[in-house]
Each structure stands twice: as C-alpha cells, then as structure tokens.
Amino acid sequence: MGASQQQKEENYQRLLSIAAKAFRRKGLDGLSVPELMKAAGLTHGGFYRHFASRDELVAEALDRAFDDARVDLFEELKPDAAGSLLPGFVETYLSPHHRDNPGRGCVLASLSSDVQRSSKGARNVYTQRFKRYIREIKELMHDDGGDEKAMALLSVLAGSVIISRALSDDALAKSVLDASLKLAKEAAGTSKSKAGTRRGK
Image 1: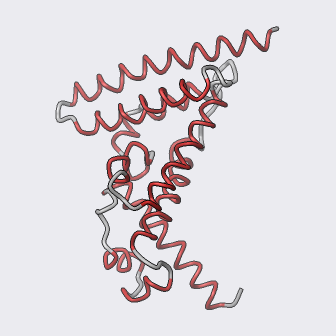
Image 2 (image 1 turned 90 degrees about the vertical axis):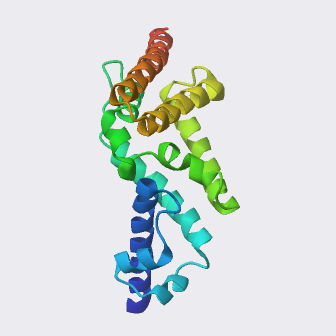
C-alpha cells in the first residue's frame, strides 16, 4: 500500500471511529458532516473521498459501533463458577454504568429508535447485527429455548436500558434496571442449571 493510500485508509478509519462513538452518544442526527470532518482534522470536501453520502457513513459507522460496543462492554467478561458468561453479560448490560455511558454502550439501547427512521442500508446493518446477537446469546444459554428465548432476553435488556435512560425519577430508573436484572438472572440461572444437568449426564 502506497503512502497516500495508507493515509487515506487511516483517515477513513478515524472518521468511522469518531462517527461511531458520536452516534452512540448523540444519535444518528447528532453529528453533521462538517462537525465530523472538523473533529478528524480534515477538510469538508475530503468527506466524499471516503463516503458516497452521509447515509453510507451512517451505515458503516453503525457497523463499527456494534464492534466498538463489544469491546467497551464485554471484553472483560469472566465466566461464573459454572463456566457461564451469561450472568456477567446480563449484569454488565443492566448496570448503571452502561446506562449512564451511551457513547460506550450497546447500539440496540442507544440507536434503535433512530435506526427505524434511517436508510435501508443502516437498517440492514442493524438487522444483521441483531441476528448475530441472537446467535451469540443462544450459545451463552446453551441453546436453551432457542431463538424465541434469546430474542425475549435481548429485548428485555435493551428495552430496560432505554426506559431507564428516559426517566427523570432516579429511583424509578434504578428500579427498572433492578427488576429487569432479577428477571434476566432467573433466565440465566435456569440456563446454567440445565446446562449443568446436561453435562452431568
């Protein structure tokens, strides 16, 4: 790769990184092209060397945001005594830290309402990533309950964080997380128990 191509790739990656974090923090309409280019230290006209349109930027940055969220939220997960990562996943997702830091949080909890009004490209990215989440949660649950249970659990997690963020009553916002955590932990505990039974056979 020549020096100019390498610089172009570095600029592209920097633009994606800035946009992905800004979108999670402020929403898909929270960052204009001029603001993005200024934050990256690049000229406004240079945007179109990397993206055909803002919609293309949104779709690609959304994909990057899902990757970034995995690192920000779940890279340090440790298995419990039964060897399951599911309880840690649930506790991390429903933590006040996740709720209070959308710029480093899950895209499902920060951008779902924005994506439904976005381009088809962005919705396609969101859909593929949602399906990937379902597959991964099924694995954490040892396929206990299949797609239906995994979708229900993921919807509880994301919906709880969305509602908790929107409430002006701090005590009520905490109660939403606590109640959802109890419900989700019951599901995680059932999965662990059944998994352990299967392994013991």
